Length: 153
Image (cartoon, rainbow, N blue to C red; front, side):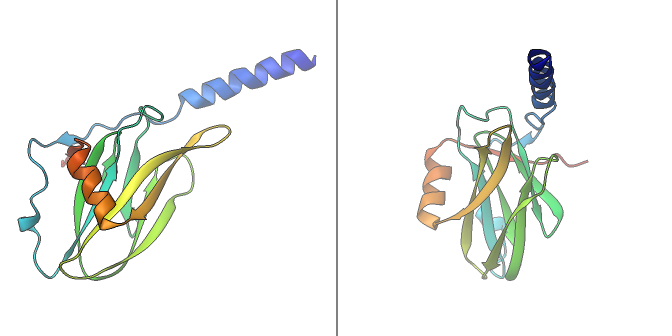
C-alpha cells in the first residue's frame, strides 16, 4: 500500500513538473539596444539572464509596477527606459508569487538587474538581483547575450 501511494505521488510530481512554462517566443534583434534612443531625463535599466544549462527551458516575465515590460529566456537581455524615481520590478513565471526588487532610478544613470532560475526541492523559481554596473555591463557585452523583446501586436 505504501509503495503504491509513493509511486502515485511520484507520478503526480512528474506530471506537475511537465506543466511548467517553457521558453517564450520573443522578438530577436540583430543589433544591441541603442542607448541614444533614451532621453537624458530618463535612466536605463538592463535586465539580463546569462546562459546556463540548468533551467535552460524556463523563462520569466519581468514587470514594472505590475505591468509586463519584457521577458528573459536563457542567454538574453533587454533594456527598459525608466523615468526618475522609485520603481518596483518583479519576475514571475505564472506559477507562484512574484519576486520583486525596488530600484531608485536617477536621470542619465544605467542599472543592471540579473535574472536567474533558482532551484528548490520540487521546482524552479525565477529570481532577480540588482548588480553592480561593472558586473552587469561585463555580462551583457561579454556573454554574447541575445537582445530580445516581447513581440508587439
